[in-house]
Amino acid sequence: MKIYTKTGDGGETGLFGGPRVRKDDPRIEAYGTVDELNAVLGLVRCEALPAEIDMLMARVQNELFDLGAELATPEPKRMGTSTLGPGQITAMEQAIDLYEAELSPLKQFILPGGARPAAELHLARTVCRRAERRLISLAAIELVSQDLVVYLNRLGDMLFVLARVVNQAKGVADVPWKKTTDNR
Image (cartoon, rainbow, N blue to C red):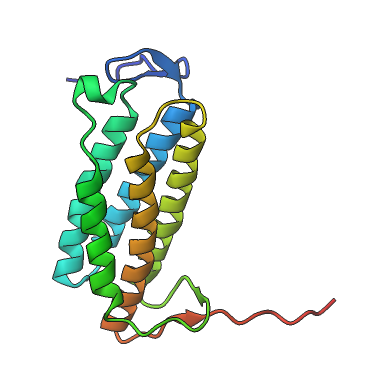
């Protein structure tokens, strides 16, 4: 099978079990940004991470593929691509609680940075927040499972916590934000 089909050369793509739409359709923007997030997590996993965090990221990558499949399907329940729900959200909340318990409470804002894998987790967090915004835009015009919105919201929180955990594991302090003085 060839990787190129030439069917998208006119600026359209096909949805799973559905019509062809423009490549800048809000649905394509949403699942394309989820795909981008998944790629950033692939980069994160190229780094030396604690084994349990690497396993967690592997699970999340698979779940993001599920999320993308659901978004690529106009009728996900009918087509069998509606697979994410409260169970995955609860598991993520439990992971956040577990890892956050290892951290000292934040007393100030921090900048994305520190050890390289922590900085990459912060990058993943920002892409996750964009995916969440794209999903909200889609949900304003089409029916979208609220579980997907909650999942991405929790994932952004978890990536923030994991960035701090990785910095701590690498012996690198979080980078505090220092307000710029007014030089006008």
